[in-house]
Image (cartoon, rainbow over all chains, first blue to last red; front, side, top):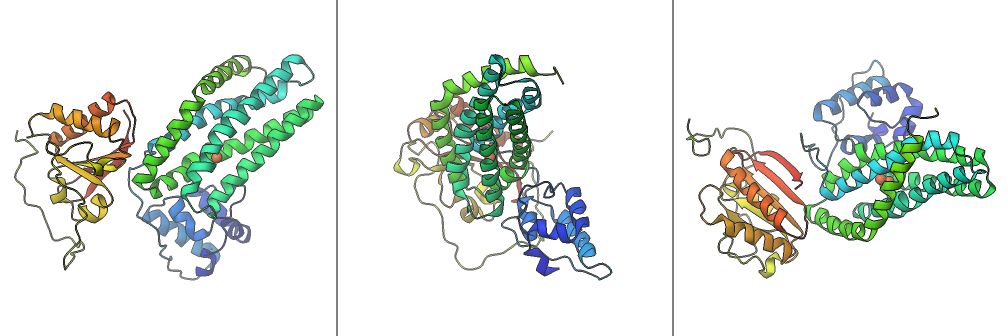
Length: 263
Length: 153
Ligand SMILES: [Fe+2]
Ligand SMILES: [Fe+2]
């Protein structure tokens, strides 16, 4: 069993598919994870499993990996014991979670926009370029830059979970670029396909950040780092305040036109 | 009903915690520490991570110096007995606005009257023009951490 602890979770799942179902039962979403290179031994810390859940999970994995043998579940070293109840985000991380809410409002409209907005019409062109404008400015230049230039820098960026996040950002940017190309060619097939892909990536990505990455980071940030990050974010927020207001209003208008209609 | 903050209790000490031997290094890096005595703009508060603890906390927490005081500046106060707590609000406001402290960690005991210290801190935070992260840590009578969370105004 020990040899599998240092194996990427995705490899473990591909060799032992039943392990994927077991992990899902503990809300460890490594099966849909885009890269899923986290090591098996790291998930206990990253997902903040309780001692009981850790024991149950590894006993179950032992039965899957070595059926019929009596396996003593390995004891995983972790930086600190999972704190009970301490599930509140630190203030700077909470501000990132709040930004996700506005991004999710746009992502929720993407299926309707992708189906109905035709870039060969003036209206359709405008709606798609507004959406892409929001994505590039608010979601990427403002929000993802806070993550990449500030938050992630407090951690070892070679950590698999952070590599996965960078990869998600890069994939999302690729689809945004493709939407712009589709817009230029006034090709609805291209804009629709790439908008939808962007929405799928961001939905999973935000869920991973809110539920796994951010809580893990918060457990490892020092008080000093939380304070520093808070004041850096406030400075960025102040510079971006007018634009943020503009985008909030824009999302409201898009919601009026695309929410609960058409599909 | 007797006030839970001053109810007499004998605490059970036969659980197996770590008992350190030898002399333990102090993490205190300033003087004075009582909130009435300190100047909020003293050099050791500038840009600091500040600990505001109720008087009883350091006696209840076995690892106070190493686990909580280390790397921080401190002031202590008793929200139940101290007079002139308006001055406390002024001083905490001055920490935030003048000394531009980085964070504030308020540590209190679990007894209800200790919540007063949190309220003093929150009033100061509302008055101040800068905003900073504030953490509240509640310590049990047996020296256990009952809760530790960031609070929002
Ligand atoms: Fe992200
Ligand atoms: Fe994010």
